[in-house]
Length: 193
Image (cartoon, rainbow, N blue to C red; front, side, top):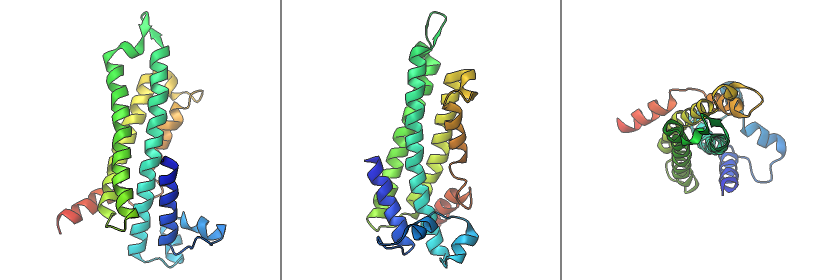
C-alpha cells in the first residue's frame, strides 16, 4: 500500500509538470528539481511551483511515516534486549511512553498523509492538506527520531547503529523545499480568506 501511494504521488507530480507516461528518464529526472531557478528555467508558473512543492510535501509525509516505522521497530527491539539493573529497559515507564509517542507519530503521519493524498488524487483542493501534512510531519518525525536516540542512549549517536542516520534524515527531510514557514503561512492564509 505504501509503495502504491508513492507511485501514485510520483505520477501526479509527473502529470502536473506535463510529463506524459511516455516521457524519457531525463524528463522525469527534471520533475524532482525543487530549486527555484531550475523551476523557473523549466517555465513553471508560481501556482504550478506551489502545487509541485505541496505534492512533494505529501510524499515527504509518507517518507517520514516509513522513517517513524523504522524508529519504532529499532527502539522496541532495543528496549526488549537492553538490560539495565537486572531488567529490560522496556519495563521502565519513561521508555514505554517514548515508544508510544513514536508509534503515535507513525499513525499520525499515515493519517495526515492519506488525507492529503486522497484530496490530490481526487482532484480536490489539497494545498491546505499538504501544508498541514508538512507541519505535522516536521513535528512528528523529529519527536520520533529524538525519542529513538533517547531510548538508545549513547549508542544512538554512534554510526555503528542506524539510529543516528534516522535522526539526521528527520532533521533534513524538508531541505528540498523553498520555505520552512510555508505550512503556517498557507494555513493562516486559508483561515483568513
